[in-house]
Image (cartoon, rainbow, N blue to C red; front, side):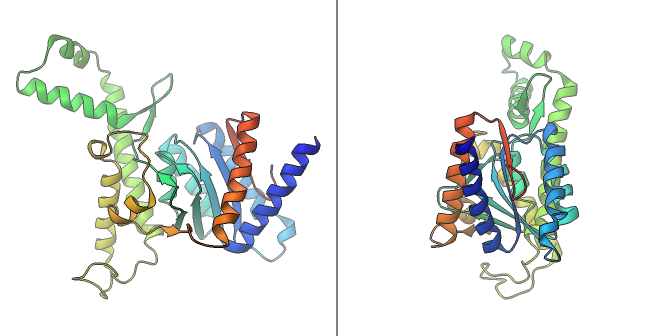
Length: 292
């Protein structure tokens, strides 16, 4: 169709501008982070690496423009394996939101780009219960609450039945998912996000001093626990903006809100492609210079 061909050409031009701006290969990912998408994602990345049009101009940097409500942390781990096999640097651009597993994915990047309207989310891991993905921390918090009530003898008969009917195997999976999330964040923050964190810049006591490996690990664990604190965020869908990420979590975010070149370029590309996705009711969408 002429309309689709026109949209494709415009989006390809805008993506090419983004690649030139970042001096990187770039891909757009929109949709759930789901096991069925590992192979398409792998093929998309491999297609960029093998692109004959690049000649000797092989980029070692990948930019992922990410829009997702979340999904599986295990699948995020595999996608990170794929990207890091081919690229030394990975940047994430979050024009709208990257929630839950999307936030976990972003933490594997060397840099995260957001503007004032962008959001990440709490990292409540999603576990497949046989029917749908459910937030693990919510279940664990409720069971912990009931157990505390049982210790003090304040458990009602109805609550006793609820506790009695819990699937211990599923509870174990929820606990494992929680620990996996913390483990992944600690590993990726230290290995990738904190690569350039060499000198203390904000701590008045340590300012100017070199950052030790143990300090990076402690800082990563602190961020992982803060993002996974269900009692603080209260909602799995809580949208965490750039100010909170910087001030509360003390996480370095690249703010393009006032960048006269990057902000309109990202907005125009993202708004057009997400409108196209919504118009066609696509549940998932990938875009690169070679794939639409």
